[in-house]
Image (tube, rainbow, N blue to C red; front, side):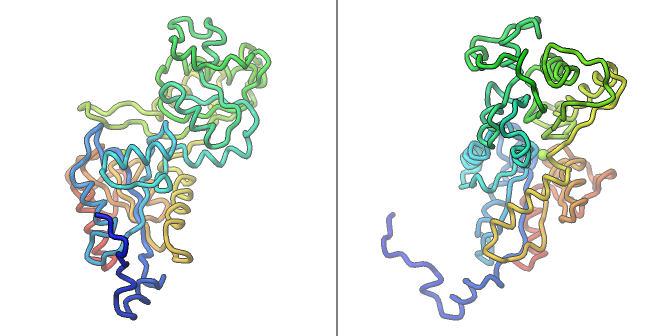
Length: 356
Ligand SMILES: [Mg+2]
């Protein structure tokens, strides 16, 4: 019901309460970084404890305070806006784009270097990652589809579908258009073709696809990966291979062909750049000048969520609803605490901070 004269608690309450509520000294100085897959959702199913946990963070706790949180995922392939809308729908609550940190979100920092130059953007469905790259500010993202459409003999084992061909850009002539960097934004939908095309760029003279250099002592084309996960978990009983496994394949082919190790830069958990980015976002969600003193990181993947959080000095909490389902703690990357699910994790953290 619309209540035009509804007043806020701060205005109707006693003066001391108004001051208390407006004082930044009383604001929470901590926040949460929550993984999505295996913590909030599994495949397409929402983990039931997740909605209750998020309501606690959204102010439905004993203190009535909203606790800042970001959803920090090694997933991606869509813009932060799309992911926020998707998560809001699934979780039945408002999640803002500013609360979403995707695997490729920190790759915005590469725009200043590659704004106007052609870069190969690999992965994702149809042209979704090209859209993400354009939204970040890359002016000339090229997809493997574009190259495959330009010259079918690049990968003769399947044709570019009509849909892909329709989307593929005809404005490029890759015999004249040097590709300056390779950026993997999401999982490849066609490992064979994408490995071939990435190797074509890496083997080329100055990024000119179709040429071949003879001296591999210097790697001309920088390679960036957005997600180091070797495995990920969905509804299937056995974990699936992720971008980390794709990287292993590319490195093996590169080594076999050139005799050299492939040099690359990786973003996503557990890499530091991702945590620096996420902490900036969390700080921006706090009222002005409130220092962020503690971050609770909840995740299901010891090698990504727990290793990254521990290395960055966050309080790591491992849950048993995803990749990890062991009895005790992870032996390789032990978390500060292991919980059955996210609800238990949030209760524990709020208790730690005296908000229960
Ligand atoms: Mg996960």
